[in-house]
Amino acid sequence: MAGIRICLIADGFFDDLEKCIASITKFTDTPISVFASGKENKEAESRFGATWRKNKLGWGHTLNHFSKESQEKYLVIMDPSTNFFGDPIPATLEKLESGYVGVGWRGGLVNTDDDWRSVDDRGAGEVDVLFSYYFGMDREFALATGGANPSATYYRNADIELSLALRAAGGKLWQLELPLEQGRHHGYHDVDPEYREKKSKDNYNRILERFRGQSDILSPRR
Image (cartoon, rainbow, N blue to C red; front, side, top):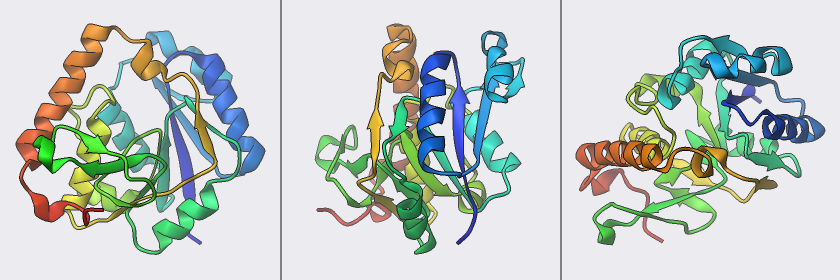
């Protein structure tokens, strides 16, 4: 099977990041890359061997960094709030090797009745959208589509934009039930609410402007 790498963004809350990494290494020997940026995250360099940059990078730039710097065919973009309680990698690889360009743990179908403003989780199966709690992707395919939008400085809804860009380029996405669990999602719960809502809205407005109404890029309804 082709190579795969797990990619984590270190942005504070290092005890939870340590727990996440320990859960991964307990069940798989898949290589892990950790990236950190911003002065406050320099500690990740010594604690986790993170690649660290002084200048703060947003979510989109960080994902593109992983895609350009890695050599493996597949990447798993994973939030440090997600932990393994088994090995999800074989099932992820099997589905990616079967031709899907994105495989994830949580996702859903765009709600067209809601004018594309929400996503409905329909469980395992082909989906329009995958979330970055755990998002395995074909690295080369993602790069060929332009990768993550550099304007996405914050993760929320940016994973939806990336998902729809992959589908617009002809890729298919699949949601799996995997042995994963989520702790406290600091990227949502522990950021300034005004910042969170503004950046989330900015990301979703780009989605609506770019994709709304293009039903041909969506997966079969179920």
